[in-house]
Length: 86
Image (cartoon, rainbow, N blue to C red; front, side, top):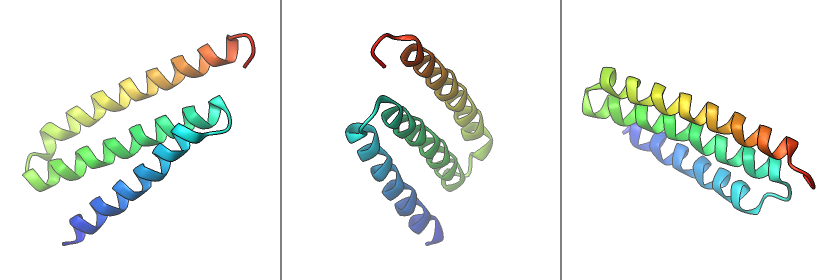
């Protein structure tokens, strides 16, 4: 029961971050929203892994996703920092 409540709470915060990513007043607010959704997705992957009883496999998936999220966030931040008009 507690994991169902935790899942709903994480989904709610993901929704708020998605609103921030779609309606952010600046590019950096949108970037922050996208990386926040990525971080919440990692926690959802771990909760799902615990529910299936295969936490070892899902930790590897979450680590791979975390690396992709980190590198993608850095790449987008560097692109928007160096682009003219930003």
